[in-house]
Length: 352
Image 1 (cartoon, helix red, strand yellow):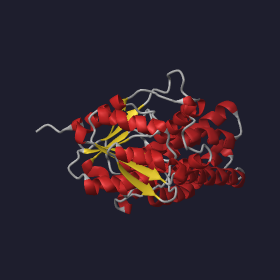
Image 2 (cartoon, helix red, strand yellow):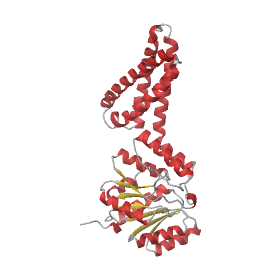
Image 3 (cartoon, helix red, strand yellow):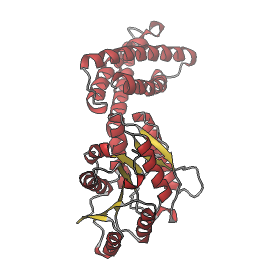
Image 4 (cartoon, helix red, strand yellow):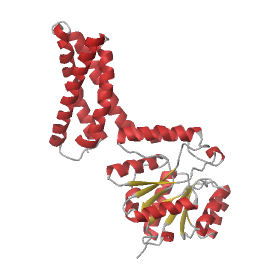
């Protein structure tokens, strides 16, 4: 029996809305959707009439007495839908500022039905004219960070138009994050639990340069990028331990082992053994949170570390012989490249 797309629940988290939310609800009703849930995330009393009008249009309105953040609003709505509309195929989250069209909402709902077990992202084209500067570069930077540290390739990491199938609602009710960082946590959770993300192209709509957005470029960006702090800490701390120890050992070993540049090889090995042990512990416990046995992880990591060590010593020695540039400077360049490659291998093979 075919799934009725109009039974898909629509969730609209909102803070201090205006007429655009009412027009959105009217358009969704005209599009056939019958389960529309609005979450008033602590809007002031002067905005109450918008939610009263939403109720008159047939919406279920849930209220926070104080502002608790977009993430909490979404989780409040997801919990309500799971309890009250268990027969719905799933839910589509739609922003209340009029930047998501009904046509695109339908596309995402249909994609959710056509791709069981997948989360659907309505993705904008940021190369189109009229995209605000902060939106273009914010998405570009976040895309690069997600790709580098998490191995996640998405064209739009910040879209609010997302479809979640019924069976995954409980998973996302318990996802960390209360404000805008919640949407980033959704992506990380999909990676952690191997939940596929299917992208659906949608219209790129920005109204009045996105002035209606409640996103704070400073505080909310800090919350979002804080999700990657453990990745950055492990990377930077291990790199610094290795470089500092290498520079120290070069000074210590240059006299007894200076002949034939052997001191570079010995310094590289000594520094790498210590930094590798530190990197392994931090990555296993804090970064990748590996669930497999420590012996299995350690064996894979040891093979990778030996290969990385050999390549580092080889390239540093070769480049030094050709250029006679400072050994530490050469090592910084060589190990920066090797470290990025190593991180990808750790993420996808060693600690997967």
